[in-house]
Length: 150
Image (spheres, rainbow, N blue to C red):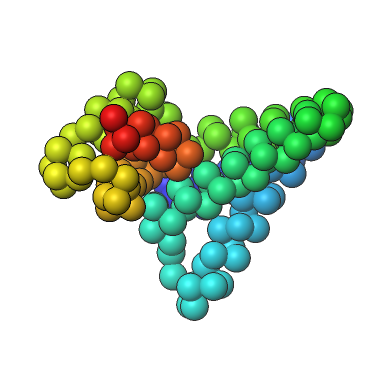
């Protein structure tokens, strides 16, 4: 079952359960997917990688918003954002631990022969593609920086 079908099924379930938080989150995902499809031209299906990027972006937006709300002492606004992020997170593959990400980064550095920060872009590109949907870019970036600067 494609991601779009999974989202539609979950959306119907949320409607029946009258779960407003889930409805809001799932409608945003559906909208983002439809927008990406129309941007790509015809009614072609999105690749799994594109769908994962859309989901990650949706989760990141909500977490960033929640962080801003918490900075301003607005827990009442942060809570729904975090709840929506959790709902969207259900559609993403299991996230890797930092140790697992570190192993992939070290293997990539060895394979590419990266030496120092000048090769960070090359390593980031390969690792980001390899771990699409399983790790966020910020975590990957921090680990790559640490490994290349040591």
